[in-house]
Image (cartoon, rainbow, N blue to C red; front, side, top):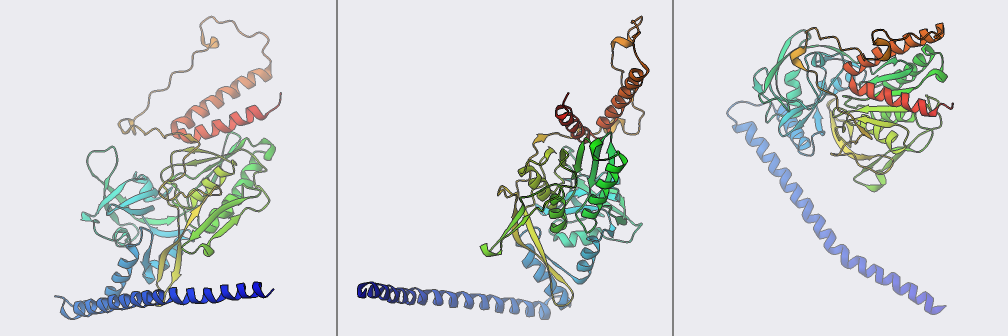
Length: 445
Protein backbone atom coordinates (compact mmCIF):
# COMPACT_ATOMS: atom_id res chain seq x y z
CA UNK A 1 0.00 0.00 0.00
CA UNK A 2 2.79 2.37 0.95
CA UNK A 3 4.61 1.59 -2.29
CA UNK A 4 1.48 2.43 -4.29
CA UNK A 5 1.03 5.74 -2.48
CA UNK A 6 4.64 6.64 -2.92
CA UNK A 7 4.53 5.77 -6.61
CA UNK A 8 1.52 7.96 -7.03
CA UNK A 9 3.10 10.80 -5.11
CA UNK A 10 6.33 10.45 -7.05
CA UNK A 11 4.36 10.72 -10.27
CA UNK A 12 2.64 13.87 -9.06
CA UNK A 13 5.88 15.54 -8.07
CA UNK A 14 7.53 14.60 -11.35
CA UNK A 15 4.55 16.05 -13.16
CA UNK A 16 4.88 19.33 -11.29
CA UNK A 17 8.59 19.53 -12.01
CA UNK A 18 8.04 18.76 -15.68
CA UNK A 19 5.35 21.41 -15.93
CA UNK A 20 7.64 23.97 -14.30
CA UNK A 21 10.49 23.14 -16.65
CA UNK A 22 8.32 23.42 -19.81
CA UNK A 23 6.20 26.37 -18.69
CA UNK A 24 9.20 28.68 -18.36
CA UNK A 25 10.15 28.66 -22.07
CA UNK A 26 6.46 28.72 -23.09
CA UNK A 27 5.75 31.83 -21.04
CA UNK A 28 8.89 33.50 -22.38
CA UNK A 29 7.87 32.61 -25.94
CA UNK A 30 4.35 34.02 -25.41
CA UNK A 31 5.77 37.22 -23.92
CA UNK A 32 8.08 37.61 -26.92
CA UNK A 33 5.16 37.04 -29.29
CA UNK A 34 3.04 39.66 -27.51
CA UNK A 35 5.95 42.10 -27.65
CA UNK A 36 6.18 41.56 -31.43
CA UNK A 37 2.44 42.17 -31.83
CA UNK A 38 2.60 45.39 -29.82
CA UNK A 39 5.61 46.55 -31.84
CA UNK A 40 3.67 45.92 -35.08
CA UNK A 41 0.64 47.80 -33.73
CA UNK A 42 2.95 50.68 -32.85
CA UNK A 43 4.25 50.53 -36.43
CA UNK A 44 0.66 50.71 -37.72
CA UNK A 45 0.05 53.75 -35.50
CA UNK A 46 3.21 55.45 -36.80
CA UNK A 47 2.19 54.88 -40.45
CA UNK A 48 -1.34 56.08 -39.76
CA UNK A 49 -0.07 59.33 -38.23
CA UNK A 50 2.43 59.85 -41.06
CA UNK A 51 -0.35 59.52 -43.66
CA UNK A 52 -2.66 61.85 -41.72
CA UNK A 53 -0.01 64.54 -41.36
CA UNK A 54 2.18 64.27 -44.44
CA UNK A 55 0.11 62.81 -47.32
CA UNK A 56 -0.10 65.23 -50.28
CA UNK A 57 -3.85 65.70 -49.74
CA UNK A 58 -5.96 65.75 -46.61
CA UNK A 59 -7.42 62.33 -45.86
CA UNK A 60 -10.59 61.25 -44.05
CA UNK A 61 -9.43 59.23 -41.06
CA UNK A 62 -12.57 57.05 -40.90
CA UNK A 63 -12.10 55.93 -44.53
CA UNK A 64 -8.42 55.29 -43.86
CA UNK A 65 -9.24 53.04 -40.91
CA UNK A 66 -12.00 51.22 -42.86
CA UNK A 67 -9.54 50.57 -45.69
CA UNK A 68 -6.98 49.19 -43.24
CA UNK A 69 -9.57 46.89 -41.62
CA UNK A 70 -10.85 45.70 -44.98
CA UNK A 71 -7.32 45.08 -46.22
CA UNK A 72 -6.63 42.95 -43.17
CA UNK A 73 -9.77 40.85 -43.73
CA UNK A 74 -9.52 40.47 -47.51
CA UNK A 75 -5.94 39.23 -47.14
CA UNK A 76 -7.35 36.12 -45.41
CA UNK A 77 -9.54 34.71 -48.20
CA UNK A 78 -11.93 35.92 -50.94
CA UNK A 79 -14.99 35.76 -48.67
CA UNK A 80 -13.85 37.66 -45.56
CA UNK A 81 -14.43 41.41 -45.62
CA UNK A 82 -15.52 44.50 -43.72
CA UNK A 83 -19.09 45.68 -44.23
CA UNK A 84 -19.57 49.40 -43.78
CA UNK A 85 -22.95 50.38 -42.28
CA UNK A 86 -24.59 50.84 -45.72
CA UNK A 87 -23.21 47.53 -47.03
CA UNK A 88 -24.42 45.77 -43.87
CA UNK A 89 -27.92 47.18 -44.43
CA UNK A 90 -27.84 46.10 -48.09
CA UNK A 91 -26.86 42.57 -47.10
CA UNK A 92 -29.75 42.28 -44.63
CA UNK A 93 -32.17 43.50 -47.31
CA UNK A 94 -30.85 40.91 -49.79
CA UNK A 95 -31.57 38.01 -47.45
CA UNK A 96 -35.20 39.18 -47.41
CA UNK A 97 -35.34 38.83 -51.18
CA UNK A 98 -35.60 42.32 -52.74
CA UNK A 99 -32.85 44.83 -53.58
CA UNK A 100 -31.53 47.08 -56.34
CA UNK A 101 -28.76 46.07 -58.72
CA UNK A 102 -27.77 43.88 -61.68
CA UNK A 103 -28.63 40.42 -60.39
CA UNK A 104 -25.24 38.65 -60.34
CA UNK A 105 -23.43 36.83 -57.56
CA UNK A 106 -19.68 37.50 -57.77
CA UNK A 107 -16.39 36.48 -56.20
CA UNK A 108 -12.77 37.51 -56.82
CA UNK A 109 -10.16 35.49 -58.69
CA UNK A 110 -6.76 36.52 -60.04
CA UNK A 111 -7.51 40.14 -59.20
CA UNK A 112 -10.66 40.27 -61.33
CA UNK A 113 -14.32 39.91 -60.48
CA UNK A 114 -15.67 36.47 -61.41
CA UNK A 115 -19.36 35.76 -61.91
CA UNK A 116 -20.51 32.85 -59.74
CA UNK A 117 -23.95 32.96 -61.30
CA UNK A 118 -26.51 35.33 -62.83
CA UNK A 119 -29.84 35.25 -61.00
CA UNK A 120 -33.02 34.27 -62.84
CA UNK A 121 -35.18 37.02 -64.33
CA UNK A 122 -32.69 39.81 -63.57
CA UNK A 123 -31.00 42.40 -65.85
CA UNK A 124 -27.74 40.41 -65.79
CA UNK A 125 -29.44 37.21 -66.93
CA UNK A 126 -31.38 39.07 -69.64
CA UNK A 127 -28.12 40.62 -70.89
CA UNK A 128 -26.56 37.17 -71.31
CA UNK A 129 -24.08 37.11 -68.39
CA UNK A 130 -22.89 33.57 -67.62
CA UNK A 131 -21.34 31.72 -64.69
CA UNK A 132 -17.55 31.83 -65.04
CA UNK A 133 -17.43 35.22 -66.80
CA UNK A 134 -14.64 37.55 -65.69
CA UNK A 135 -15.47 41.25 -65.31
CA UNK A 136 -12.38 43.32 -66.11
CA UNK A 137 -13.82 46.84 -66.50
CA UNK A 138 -16.88 48.75 -65.32
CA UNK A 139 -17.81 51.71 -67.53
CA UNK A 140 -14.29 51.59 -69.00
CA UNK A 141 -12.57 51.65 -65.60
CA UNK A 142 -10.43 48.64 -64.65
CA UNK A 143 -11.36 46.65 -61.53
CA UNK A 144 -7.87 45.13 -61.25
CA UNK A 145 -6.42 45.89 -57.83
CA UNK A 146 -9.76 46.75 -56.23
CA UNK A 147 -11.26 44.77 -53.38
CA UNK A 148 -14.42 42.82 -54.18
CA UNK A 149 -16.55 45.28 -52.21
CA UNK A 150 -15.03 48.22 -54.09
CA UNK A 151 -15.76 46.55 -57.44
CA UNK A 152 -19.34 45.78 -56.37
CA UNK A 153 -19.77 49.40 -55.28
CA UNK A 154 -18.74 50.48 -58.81
CA UNK A 155 -21.54 48.33 -60.25
CA UNK A 156 -24.20 49.85 -58.03
CA UNK A 157 -26.26 52.79 -59.21
CA UNK A 158 -29.76 54.23 -59.60
CA UNK A 159 -32.49 51.94 -60.89
CA UNK A 160 -32.96 52.53 -64.64
CA UNK A 161 -29.37 53.67 -65.26
CA UNK A 162 -27.07 51.92 -67.75
CA UNK A 163 -23.79 50.23 -66.95
CA UNK A 164 -21.23 48.89 -69.45
CA UNK A 165 -19.36 45.81 -68.23
CA UNK A 166 -16.33 44.41 -70.07
CA UNK A 167 -16.33 40.62 -69.96
CA UNK A 168 -13.73 37.94 -70.66
CA UNK A 169 -15.35 34.57 -71.39
CA UNK A 170 -13.73 31.19 -71.92
CA UNK A 171 -13.94 30.14 -75.56
CA UNK A 172 -14.18 33.72 -76.85
CA UNK A 173 -10.87 35.21 -77.99
CA UNK A 174 -11.53 38.89 -77.32
CA UNK A 175 -13.11 40.74 -74.37
CA UNK A 176 -16.52 42.18 -75.15
CA UNK A 177 -18.84 44.77 -73.63
CA UNK A 178 -22.24 44.01 -72.11
CA UNK A 179 -24.80 46.78 -71.55
CA UNK A 180 -27.06 46.28 -68.52
CA UNK A 181 -29.86 48.50 -67.22
CA UNK A 182 -29.98 48.46 -63.43
CA UNK A 183 -33.30 47.43 -61.90
CA UNK A 184 -34.91 46.42 -58.63
CA UNK A 185 -34.10 42.76 -58.07
CA UNK A 186 -37.02 40.76 -56.73
CA UNK A 187 -35.92 37.24 -56.02
CA UNK A 188 -38.52 34.50 -56.08
CA UNK A 189 -36.60 31.84 -54.20
CA UNK A 190 -38.60 28.86 -55.52
CA UNK A 191 -40.52 28.53 -58.80
CA UNK A 192 -42.56 25.30 -59.00
CA UNK A 193 -44.04 23.81 -62.16
CA UNK A 194 -44.89 20.44 -63.67
CA UNK A 195 -43.42 18.73 -66.72
CA UNK A 196 -45.78 15.88 -67.50
CA UNK A 197 -46.17 14.12 -64.15
CA UNK A 198 -42.85 15.40 -62.81
CA UNK A 199 -42.65 18.27 -60.32
CA UNK A 200 -39.83 20.72 -61.15
CA UNK A 201 -38.67 23.12 -58.42
CA UNK A 202 -36.38 25.88 -59.68
CA UNK A 203 -34.52 27.21 -56.62
CA UNK A 204 -32.65 30.46 -57.29
CA UNK A 205 -31.28 31.37 -53.86
CA UNK A 206 -31.31 30.42 -50.17
CA UNK A 207 -33.02 33.26 -48.32
CA UNK A 208 -35.85 33.50 -45.80
CA UNK A 209 -38.37 32.58 -48.52
CA UNK A 210 -36.68 29.36 -49.68
CA UNK A 211 -38.02 26.61 -47.42
CA UNK A 212 -41.58 28.04 -47.24
CA UNK A 213 -41.53 28.27 -51.05
CA UNK A 214 -40.35 24.67 -51.33
CA UNK A 215 -43.03 23.39 -48.96
CA UNK A 216 -45.91 25.26 -50.59
CA UNK A 217 -44.65 24.55 -54.12
CA UNK A 218 -44.52 20.79 -53.58
CA UNK A 219 -48.00 20.72 -52.05
CA UNK A 220 -49.52 22.86 -54.80
CA UNK A 221 -47.98 20.89 -57.70
CA UNK A 222 -48.91 17.51 -56.15
CA UNK A 223 -52.49 18.72 -55.80
CA UNK A 224 -52.55 19.84 -59.46
CA UNK A 225 -51.44 16.35 -60.50
CA UNK A 226 -54.20 14.73 -58.45
CA UNK A 227 -52.11 13.60 -55.47
CA UNK A 228 -48.69 12.07 -54.84
CA UNK A 229 -49.74 8.72 -56.34
CA UNK A 230 -49.75 10.42 -59.76
CA UNK A 231 -46.33 12.08 -59.33
CA UNK A 232 -43.42 10.46 -61.20
CA UNK A 233 -40.77 12.23 -59.15
CA UNK A 234 -39.22 15.61 -58.31
CA UNK A 235 -36.45 17.61 -60.00
CA UNK A 236 -34.70 20.12 -57.73
CA UNK A 237 -32.98 22.61 -60.04
CA UNK A 238 -30.04 24.27 -58.24
CA UNK A 239 -28.20 25.43 -61.36
CA UNK A 240 -26.71 28.93 -61.00
CA UNK A 241 -27.89 29.08 -57.39
CA UNK A 242 -25.07 30.93 -55.56
CA UNK A 243 -26.20 29.87 -52.08
CA UNK A 244 -27.19 32.00 -49.10
CA UNK A 245 -28.36 31.13 -45.61
CA UNK A 246 -26.97 27.96 -44.03
CA UNK A 247 -30.13 27.28 -42.00
CA UNK A 248 -32.20 27.27 -45.21
CA UNK A 249 -29.84 24.74 -46.84
CA UNK A 250 -30.32 22.50 -43.80
CA UNK A 251 -34.12 22.82 -43.98
CA UNK A 252 -34.21 22.08 -47.70
CA UNK A 253 -32.05 18.96 -47.25
CA UNK A 254 -34.20 17.86 -44.31
CA UNK A 255 -37.31 18.17 -46.50
CA UNK A 256 -36.17 15.07 -48.45
CA UNK A 257 -34.42 13.08 -45.69
CA UNK A 258 -35.86 10.95 -42.89
CA UNK A 259 -32.72 10.71 -40.75
CA UNK A 260 -28.95 11.07 -40.68
CA UNK A 261 -26.43 13.89 -40.81
CA UNK A 262 -26.98 16.75 -43.24
CA UNK A 263 -23.78 18.74 -42.80
CA UNK A 264 -21.05 19.29 -40.24
CA UNK A 265 -18.89 22.36 -39.69
CA UNK A 266 -15.39 22.42 -38.25
CA UNK A 267 -13.69 25.58 -37.12
CA UNK A 268 -10.22 26.38 -35.87
CA UNK A 269 -10.97 24.83 -32.50
CA UNK A 270 -12.18 21.22 -32.64
CA UNK A 271 -14.67 21.95 -29.86
CA UNK A 272 -16.42 24.50 -32.09
CA UNK A 273 -17.56 21.82 -34.55
CA UNK A 274 -21.28 21.27 -35.14
CA UNK A 275 -23.33 18.50 -36.73
CA UNK A 276 -26.79 19.12 -38.14
CA UNK A 277 -29.09 16.12 -38.49
CA UNK A 278 -32.31 15.42 -40.36
CA UNK A 279 -35.64 14.97 -38.61
CA UNK A 280 -38.29 12.37 -39.59
CA UNK A 281 -40.58 13.33 -42.45
CA UNK A 282 -40.12 13.48 -46.25
CA UNK A 283 -42.27 16.09 -48.00
CA UNK A 284 -42.31 14.00 -51.21
CA UNK A 285 -43.37 10.73 -49.54
CA UNK A 286 -40.18 9.08 -50.80
CA UNK A 287 -40.67 9.92 -54.48
CA UNK A 288 -37.54 9.66 -56.71
CA UNK A 289 -35.45 12.84 -56.72
CA UNK A 290 -33.01 14.33 -59.25
CA UNK A 291 -30.89 17.38 -58.39
CA UNK A 292 -29.52 19.56 -61.20
CA UNK A 293 -26.23 21.43 -60.58
CA UNK A 294 -23.61 23.29 -62.61
CA UNK A 295 -20.58 25.54 -62.13
CA UNK A 296 -22.84 28.31 -60.79
CA UNK A 297 -24.16 26.13 -57.94
CA UNK A 298 -22.27 27.21 -54.84
CA UNK A 299 -22.21 27.15 -51.04
CA UNK A 300 -25.69 26.30 -49.71
CA UNK A 301 -26.53 24.61 -53.04
CA UNK A 302 -23.52 22.34 -52.57
CA UNK A 303 -24.56 21.50 -49.00
CA UNK A 304 -27.95 20.28 -50.29
CA UNK A 305 -26.51 18.39 -53.28
CA UNK A 306 -23.75 16.82 -51.17
CA UNK A 307 -26.12 15.68 -48.41
CA UNK A 308 -28.66 14.15 -50.81
CA UNK A 309 -25.86 12.48 -52.80
CA UNK A 310 -24.16 10.96 -49.75
CA UNK A 311 -27.47 9.56 -48.46
CA UNK A 312 -28.25 8.24 -51.97
CA UNK A 313 -31.54 10.07 -51.76
CA UNK A 314 -31.06 11.83 -55.10
CA UNK A 315 -29.31 11.38 -58.44
CA UNK A 316 -27.10 14.42 -59.08
CA UNK A 317 -27.10 15.46 -62.74
CA UNK A 318 -25.27 18.22 -64.63
CA UNK A 319 -21.71 19.51 -64.28
CA UNK A 320 -19.36 20.01 -61.31
CA UNK A 321 -20.39 22.70 -58.83
CA UNK A 322 -18.43 25.83 -57.84
CA UNK A 323 -16.54 24.46 -54.82
CA UNK A 324 -17.19 26.94 -51.98
CA UNK A 325 -16.95 24.86 -48.82
CA UNK A 326 -16.47 27.55 -46.19
CA UNK A 327 -18.83 29.15 -43.69
CA UNK A 328 -18.92 32.92 -43.12
CA UNK A 329 -20.20 34.46 -39.90
CA UNK A 330 -21.53 38.01 -39.90
CA UNK A 331 -20.30 39.74 -36.73
CA UNK A 332 -21.87 43.16 -35.99
CA UNK A 333 -19.33 45.78 -34.90
CA UNK A 334 -19.50 49.11 -33.13
CA UNK A 335 -20.48 51.93 -35.46
CA UNK A 336 -23.27 49.89 -37.13
CA UNK A 337 -20.88 48.08 -39.50
CA UNK A 338 -20.08 44.37 -39.50
CA UNK A 339 -17.34 41.88 -40.25
CA UNK A 340 -17.84 38.94 -42.61
CA UNK A 341 -15.36 36.37 -41.34
CA UNK A 342 -14.69 32.82 -42.53
CA UNK A 343 -15.04 30.80 -39.34
CA UNK A 344 -15.39 27.17 -40.46
CA UNK A 345 -15.31 24.64 -43.27
CA UNK A 346 -18.32 22.47 -43.89
CA UNK A 347 -18.32 18.75 -44.66
CA UNK A 348 -20.89 16.47 -46.27
CA UNK A 349 -22.26 13.49 -44.29
CA UNK A 350 -19.49 11.20 -45.62
CA UNK A 351 -16.83 13.66 -44.38
CA UNK A 352 -16.05 15.24 -47.77
CA UNK A 353 -14.83 18.81 -47.89
CA UNK A 354 -16.14 20.52 -51.00
CA UNK A 355 -13.74 23.47 -50.69
CA UNK A 356 -12.08 24.07 -54.09
CA UNK A 357 -13.33 20.64 -55.29
CA UNK A 358 -17.08 21.04 -55.74
CA UNK A 359 -19.73 18.33 -55.95
CA UNK A 360 -19.18 15.94 -58.86
CA UNK A 361 -22.49 14.86 -60.45
CA UNK A 362 -23.42 11.18 -60.62
CA UNK A 363 -24.28 11.68 -64.29
CA UNK A 364 -22.36 14.36 -66.20
CA UNK A 365 -24.63 16.17 -68.64
CA UNK A 366 -23.40 19.31 -70.38
CA UNK A 367 -25.87 21.94 -71.56
CA UNK A 368 -25.35 22.34 -75.32
CA UNK A 369 -24.63 26.02 -76.11
CA UNK A 370 -27.17 27.87 -78.18
CA UNK A 371 -25.93 28.77 -81.64
CA UNK A 372 -25.90 32.60 -81.77
CA UNK A 373 -25.94 32.43 -85.58
CA UNK A 374 -29.55 31.26 -85.56
CA UNK A 375 -30.65 33.39 -82.60
CA UNK A 376 -33.79 35.26 -83.57
CA UNK A 377 -34.07 33.46 -86.89
CA UNK A 378 -36.89 31.10 -87.70
CA UNK A 379 -35.52 27.61 -87.27
CA UNK A 380 -36.30 24.94 -89.80
CA UNK A 381 -38.92 22.45 -88.70
CA UNK A 382 -37.34 19.20 -87.51
CA UNK A 383 -38.08 16.26 -89.78
CA UNK A 384 -40.77 13.94 -88.48
CA UNK A 385 -39.74 10.45 -87.47
CA UNK A 386 -40.35 7.88 -90.22
CA UNK A 387 -42.72 5.13 -89.08
CA UNK A 388 -44.79 2.37 -90.69
CA UNK A 389 -47.88 4.58 -90.46
CA UNK A 390 -46.12 7.32 -92.45
CA UNK A 391 -45.43 5.05 -95.45
CA UNK A 392 -47.61 5.58 -98.51
CA UNK A 393 -50.18 2.86 -98.89
CA UNK A 394 -49.53 1.36 -95.45
CA UNK A 395 -52.20 -0.97 -94.12
CA UNK A 396 -54.47 0.60 -91.51
CA UNK A 397 -55.03 -0.97 -88.12
CA UNK A 398 -58.58 -2.28 -88.55
CA UNK A 399 -58.85 -3.35 -84.93
CA UNK A 400 -57.82 -0.03 -83.32
CA UNK A 401 -60.29 1.05 -80.67
CA UNK A 402 -61.21 4.61 -79.78
CA UNK A 403 -59.14 4.32 -76.60
CA UNK A 404 -56.13 3.18 -78.63
CA UNK A 405 -56.56 6.05 -81.08
CA UNK A 406 -56.72 8.47 -78.15
CA UNK A 407 -53.59 6.84 -76.69
CA UNK A 408 -51.80 7.27 -80.03
CA UNK A 409 -52.59 10.99 -80.09
CA UNK A 410 -51.45 11.39 -76.47
CA UNK A 411 -48.17 9.59 -77.26
CA UNK A 412 -47.54 11.94 -80.19
CA UNK A 413 -48.25 14.98 -78.00
CA UNK A 414 -45.83 13.70 -75.35
CA UNK A 415 -43.15 13.12 -77.98
CA UNK A 416 -43.51 16.69 -79.24
CA UNK A 417 -43.43 18.08 -75.69
CA UNK A 418 -40.28 16.06 -74.87
CA UNK A 419 -38.57 17.21 -78.08
CA UNK A 420 -39.33 20.86 -77.27
CA UNK A 421 -38.01 20.47 -73.70
CA UNK A 422 -34.76 18.92 -75.00
CA UNK A 423 -34.33 21.89 -77.30
CA UNK A 424 -35.10 24.45 -74.58
CA UNK A 425 -33.27 22.82 -71.65
CA UNK A 426 -31.38 19.61 -72.39
CA UNK A 427 -30.22 19.04 -68.79
CA UNK A 428 -33.76 19.33 -67.40
CA UNK A 429 -35.10 17.01 -70.12
CA UNK A 430 -32.42 14.48 -69.14
CA UNK A 431 -33.47 14.70 -65.47
CA UNK A 432 -37.14 14.18 -66.35
CA UNK A 433 -36.23 11.16 -68.51
CA UNK A 434 -34.33 9.61 -65.56
CA UNK A 435 -37.44 9.87 -63.39
CA UNK A 436 -39.61 8.33 -66.12
CA UNK A 437 -37.16 5.44 -66.39
CA UNK A 438 -37.15 4.90 -62.62
CA UNK A 439 -40.96 4.83 -62.61
CA UNK A 440 -41.03 2.37 -65.52
CA UNK A 441 -38.86 -0.19 -63.74
CA UNK A 442 -40.64 0.36 -60.40
CA UNK A 443 -44.13 -0.39 -61.80
CA UNK A 444 -44.96 -4.07 -61.50
CA UNK A 445 -46.65 -5.73 -64.50
